[in-house]
Length: 507
Image (cartoon, rainbow, N blue to C red; front, side, top):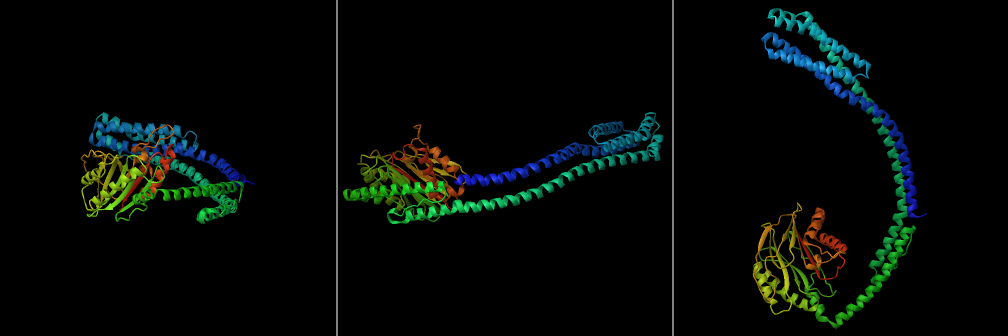
């Protein structure tokens, strides 16, 4: 049985059990929830309205008393408005409780009690006040009959409110009880699913992980063995066995290519020792450890031997860090000679503390008699001041990305380095903890995709901004991921030398 068949069988059994239990529970829940929610949706507004009825009746009684005591027509208007609102609310409650006979009866009782109070108190008082008989009106409104009908009205309204609230609560309790039952059912389903998962993981360990571990051990042995001669033995389910066969084929092809490359390298070292020496001079395998900054760099030669690109990292006398990325026109041995000369001049000038524009002027003098020109950018990172200062001689802009993912470009500040000389401006911006700077040569952004479109510097900035914070805080990982994305996009990856350097300021 293939791995896919085993996985589908285990998944099908688990899915069938879960679906069956889910259908049973869903049917019961739908019936109960529909009824309970319907009651709550109907009665929740009715509960609020019944509470307002009591308030409006109390407001009407208070306004009537004010009218009698103060003879204010505004109080009479307030009474009529409050009583009108109470009457309207009772009419709405009569409609809302039409399907609940007991509640409808209580609405009718509350309506009748309000009418009785109006007939015993409000109407005769208003008539007496209209006839100017204020004293008699006061006696009527304070009579036992008036108070008795008012108390009856309040009691009827409160009884209606309490019954509505109790009915709504009862519906909620029914739904809560079923929810509890649903929870117990889901717990049982969870137990069954857990057992299914245990069985699944047992099968995963036996059918997948164990063969994968064996395959991994074979690949590790093949990687570590001299000449990668240790064979990779296919085993396990058909899918994993197929991977093992492909890995063994890859190992054999790799061994053959390594032997060819070694032969080519030996021939190169025998026939071109000067080129090899220049390669060693320009190479900077490991980024130096510099307090306050994390640093990483990468260089790849288009011709596979020596590049006209290079990068450098130098600590200046004031404790700041100088980063250099430069690109000599063309590539190959001739470009490398110019690169070695210009790099030595720039490194010496930076080490003795020369200003960045002066370093550019000295570098231009160093290549004045060459057929090649040089583009270069120097970045000075000062942790104490929290700044980044740059001087850009016709080079692609470096990119700074803040901790908040705001990207900016370190644009050119003067002409490229050549026999023509020139003047260069120095610019500065803030460089806070967690900020990133990335500089590169044109080989990175001039690669073309399948449609023939070049990669722009802005797209590089987008790649960096899309990376998670922990990735941006690791320059080596950031460069690796960036190169992988650019390489995946490019249709002509090896068309030019590529150099990339990234630095992150620590917190």
